[in-house]
Length: 409
Ligand code: PLP
Image 1 (cartoon, rainbow, N blue to C red):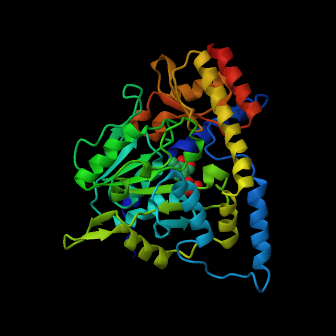
Image 2 (spheres, rainbow, N blue to C red; image 1 turned 90 degrees about the horizontal axis):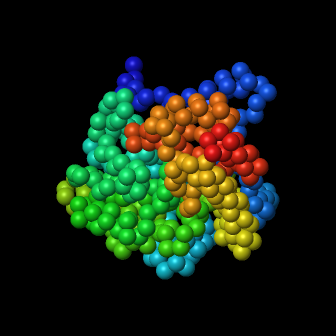
């Protein structure tokens, strides 16, 4: 009989959202007259903007004509989308990224998981803590995380981020091969300045490490001079791969389109000790295992960069960020220590009274009928913190914050 990949058996259950969902449903069943407001939503809620749906509909119609029909697309994405991304996200900002370094995919989640195929089985991985769980679990599936101890993975290097260090991760205290960074950060909603990011790039260059930089929330940055791309940091083209997505930028969570930048200058070590370009390996991998994102979806993604698309999306993002402001200011007024929410749709708060994240989850649900996400679900350093998100409606967000203000203010 087939022997399965035993690393899957080491994974703890995907407990976090299953458990928050279970507790919310139990509360609702016991209190059918009360409305629970969900500020734990990690998905966008507003519809695709008209510029995007128009482009998608036109592309679908094109596909139904003999002249417009298209079969398999180019392995790395249609040039109309690659060039639109290159121009708007990089060239216009003075950043060097070549067309052959941009790869269109069906999601940032897939990209951060798939890129590991290029890493050796024993590569040492560092993650910020708390963290977007995909980096951890996907490396655990590949056997790089070691064993689950009930709180941590034995082979992962954790870089704790907390109020004490201003949510700026320390550099790894030992050699690692890969560092995952995500800015604007999920779950803390915090960002790094160029000066805070630079030491990571310098460290990676000195030690020969790779940085996987997840910029899925770049569209939410409002503070001037906060880097939107790792390539704003000198030397990053030698050591960093950048993961991006249309999911949170343009509401594509259900439509699926993303891109990854793998510079030709980023190298790993071959078996014979030679330097091998990750870009060449990634091209080989994509050509072998991927048949591209559908033509209508790539057309829809390209419409994000049209003048109408940009104007319409600006309004959508501003709406989410206004919710973030409402939560941040409301909680501060109620006496909470609040982080994030300025350059990201996530608000990270310190649980009052020194209780656990889960105890606060229960208390918030019971006293305010507001649901969020316990910080401990994102890693050991998340204990004592709590995540709220800006993705609910403005009305529900205001109502939730008023309830919290009445209970705590
Ligand atoms: N990266 C981060 C940090 C995320 O929070 C998410 C989704 O929540 C993703 C990537 C997933 O992006 P995509 O929808 O493109 O797979």
